[in-house]
Image 1 (cartoon, one colour):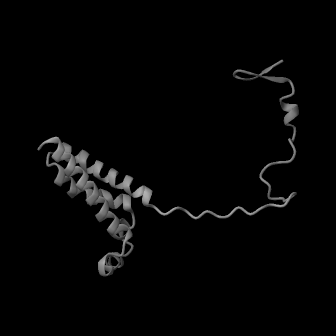
Image 2: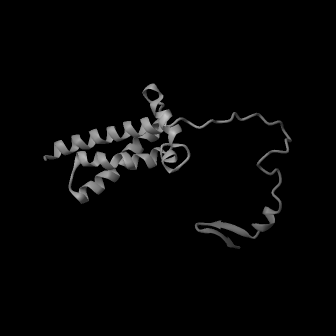
Image 3: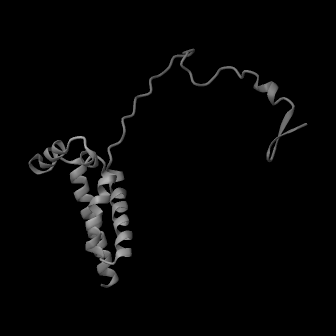
Length: 138
């Protein structure tokens, strides 16, 4: 098998692993068949596996690696690479987290993070002057 054919097979396998894993972990499926499968599996280890894209991609990538190569050592590396590539494709597609709005605080509010007093910092560093490596005594 030449390098171009191997590269094309790898890219196709990456896309297939991502698609099948995304379907099983994040979608309802045609006719809600995936939802029904998840409900049937319940909360056992198979049901929990269906909820984790990263875990599921390992299992989906194992047979897909046979599409790319059949040599045992090459298969092992290809298996992990396919799962890793599918995970990388999934990361940008994740929904952004909710961001709470910042409410304006009134002056003198007790929830301020910064202190308004130095609490003795001047005395601690009074006899020190800055040098290239921190502070040194005068």
